[in-house]
Figure 1 (cartoon, one colour):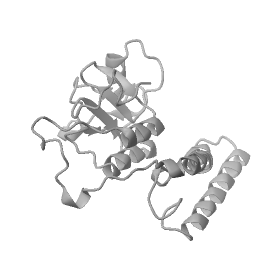
Figure 2 (cartoon, one colour):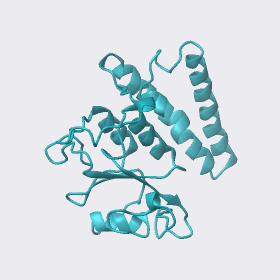
Figure 3 (cartoon, one colour):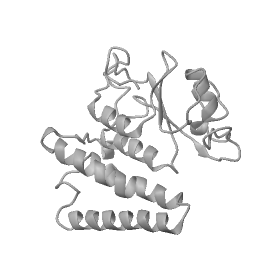
Length: 218
């Protein structure tokens, strides 16, 4: 796993390509981070993958053929597995999204959504020499939110842990349960966690107060 904003992967606008799938909640949180950090397509372009396990050789994600924003702009890959193998020869793990590629080196920066959200919150893409072409010109989206403010970091980390266990992973445990008892246990965790969220949101606009944080993106 690499990290944006380092000497290995400097925050240069347009240098990276992000691959996401709208059907995936892990991808969705990364796209939300892009929006709330006001990161434009010129600064960090992203490609939407198509969820089609019948066509994918491993993992379910393939590239579309009808829309330009669903094609692989780097190598013209057929599916995500081909992209993984191109960037990491001999790779045998799961071919998951989201996925961030360094176009200059042709290597994988990260495929972990939690790390990507944190990176996007910390990174400050350099302005181009022209000064304007990488900026987001959508005045309706001209905000830049700190999703991990210092005074809330301990609370965010704590919230992230139970949200992951009870909701993010909980729904997966429900979906992949192989027995009624396993399903019931997972559903109980999901229900209790959603009740906890409801209780928190009854007292404030967002989970940890009046401003949105990383925990809300989950």
